[in-house]
Length: 295
Image 1 (spheres, rainbow, N blue to C red):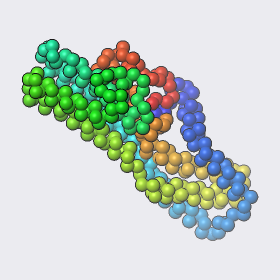
Image 2 (image 1 turned 180 degrees about the vertical axis):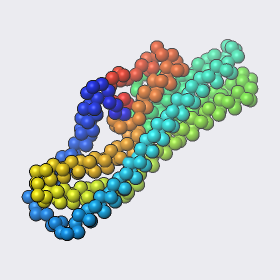
Image 3 (image 1 turned 120 degrees about the horizontal axis):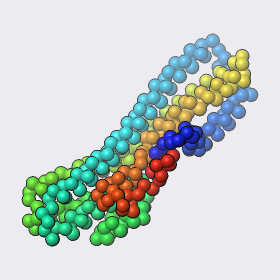
Image 4 (image 1 turned 30 degrees about the horizontal axis):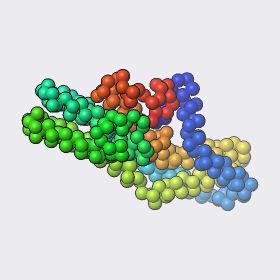
């Protein structure tokens, strides 16, 4: 997640965006260089009206797509908020059902550690990367390559064990399984966002529309009575429209292991601190508070 931090924050953000869009910006410059010496075939009476209608259409389509992309990003952020909430609820519920019986202590401790590992493993699974070092050590009772889904299943098994041994009553079992089910629901929503992107044909259409309008508008401005100003304004218009389309593309994938991701590892450090204490190694943020990018 890109953040604007400090006096030079906006410049850092612009640099990161330009770096991410470097090939698109290069393509804009190349296309503009090709169009400048070519006579403009659109210098006809009704060309301005056609471009105006085309510009409105491009703005509407790009705006709709970017709104949809942002809604996907925000929904993913909200679902991760639910993971944080239900992890804390698990922690509190385990305290509430603890009777102090010696046989309960190792199970409750394991469930807390597993809940923390679940959060880290979920972030890794969603990004398609290996879990950060130290995560597997949280629960040596579980296999190294276990998935987030299997970790929740193991939590349910421990709840059943506590119930079968008579350590918790039916109401406590329902409470613990209610939190477990809420985590399953949040995880399923996050997987849906990751696995079901905006249809490719629609994305191609929006990108082609942005480029077509930008090229047509540049060719008109290039042929104006003020060529240098026209070229400058045309380049700016191309950057704005194509850049807006690209930004929508970036944020519609909030869990693809890029600088546009939501800060999932930050959320995991919060959960670790809540359940295992602020002094735990995994409770320390991986980036400083002044970092321009949080992962």
